[in-house]
Picture 1: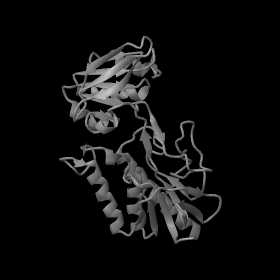
Picture 2: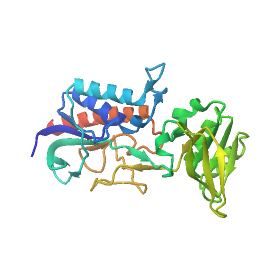
Picture 3: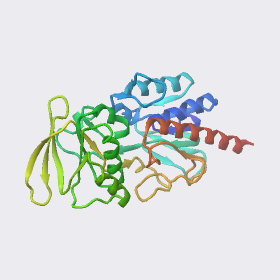
Picture 4: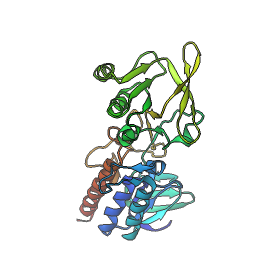
Length: 307
């Protein structure tokens, strides 16, 4: 068994790193299990313009590097390896990374959620070069351009409505013949003159040299193929919370961690922060806010244990 910690934070996106800044400044011995690819989804983005304090914007990886340096400055320890398993059955909790196990009085789960991508040729290498999963983050980059939104739920409708304030044309591409979005969201989309709808269709390839230039489309009923010139693609087919390795933690039907009260999970001493529980906002600034809140609640909880 390795060292005993006051808190182990699993995850190193804005939620995890903000939590680490707060726990270390509260003089709590803190270990961050950052992961092999640390930093969360912002490591995949380029210019971030909506994080307060950076009027000219900041590159996503730079923002995360700054957050990490700040946590390290106050004494947070980091392991750049992937979390393996957690035993929440008794105190102290045991958190394993590879063949090493660490003990802790409290835990913050901040493992985030990954965008469900289309998984088609040309998509991954163009993330940040015309392929996005966040209209509220990137819509302004597509002013007076033509974009596609892929999806059929409320989040896809919302993305399309946000983009319509900037883009010339927004085309919603959905593989089925009808949307699963709520009636009110569908009505707003149908009434927006900038938004067009392409049903029974799916993207099979993203084309372009250095950035998105066009897509290959396939009709899901006739198998007819076509190409469409386009400047951007916004993927809105859902998120996958990173919760598969947690046993004994209550999850909802989509796999997100259930918050019971004050950022506590169903296990006393196990807190949660960020996109791993947040289905609604999915912003760096809200994740950071959740990280701060979880850390403050954890401090109160620990103080009560020793009172």
